[in-house]
Length: 338
View 1 (cartoon, rainbow, N blue to C red):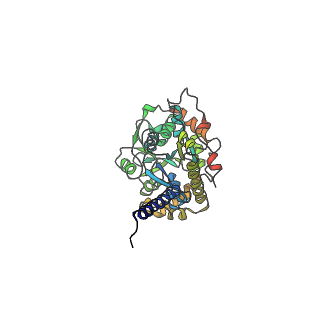
View 2 (view 1 turned 60 degrees about the horizontal axis):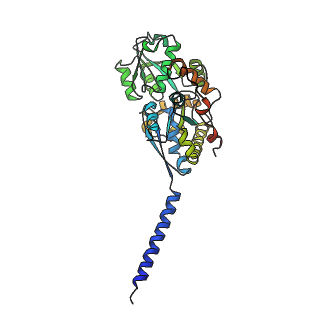
View 3 (view 1 turned 90 degrees about the vertical axis):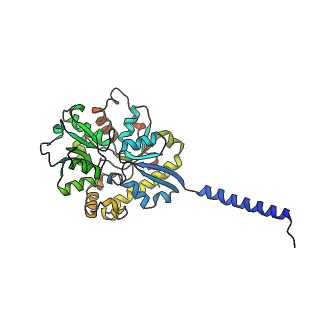
């Protein structure tokens, strides 16, 4: 029995229509793709990014989040401004710095209320007893224009030095920072965990200024200092409110997890190479510094004012500029988080 050409054509058309319906249905439910640049995702200060991924919270929100690693926050910021990524996991101070340059960027989720940074001094240089002794020294920072550079400049100027009295050397973090100190390319430098613990354990460095806790931060900087955050261009946030809300939902859940679980439980969720061969040291450092994270992603009261005051101490970009702090962060999404 022959099958008519018309029937075959109709059947083929029906199959195509069905396939098209399935395809469009798949597209409708596909996860939204968002790319975030992290200023060194092995750093404990930026732990919420990798933890949210490990816990599956991005997927729970229907997001396909790609995390890219960039050791220096200033380079991550440039990637975002160029449109290569939608957001940055980095320090809030860039939002203020960029407004002074005519660019509007806002912290959407505030991860921490202390920098989690330490100024370490090489034990080869016992003459460095305070920031006033930075004169003539080479000081390690992650990158020029980075938050570690901002904080280093502030501490030096606060101690009575001029910016030309010392040299900021971009050395990244981890192995590159450690090598720079071992080779005496830097005599002191600002870094985070787990780099801090690694150098303290070997006795190659000692702590000069500790900003891992809220108390230490207030002593060094004069107030609560909102640091690690998810920041994005204001225009992108306005145009993508649904995706921004989903990101806020995932990160607020992550911050709650950090606040309700032990350092050991959190460490178990992280890639094993982050321990750098010393899991106990990693867990201890996380336990000691865990209080820097906010419980809900909300900007701490008075924090933006402290950051503006710190940056205004040394930054020529900010001098004579009117900064609208209300445009450097938003609490709308974290307060609506599920």
